[in-house]
Image (tube, rainbow, N blue to C red):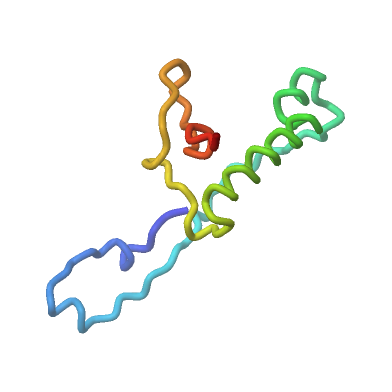
Length: 103
């Protein structure tokens, strides 16, 4: 994916505002095709790393529902990364829903 030359212009002069530049994307004609192996060819360890278990999906669902409730059930109010805490041990972001537990 690459930008077209006309979309890279970011001039903010008043003369450029009268000119309409055509924005868009183009694709390179030279590509590298890589086959994707069938899932049956993966080892058990590879599958475990690639796919979530049903327990992991359930755990994520509970976490997501808690965070969605914290954000007022509105995706427009979703907590942004800069609003989250950072775990001192792992460096992972922590949603405020998990730091402001209701007593």
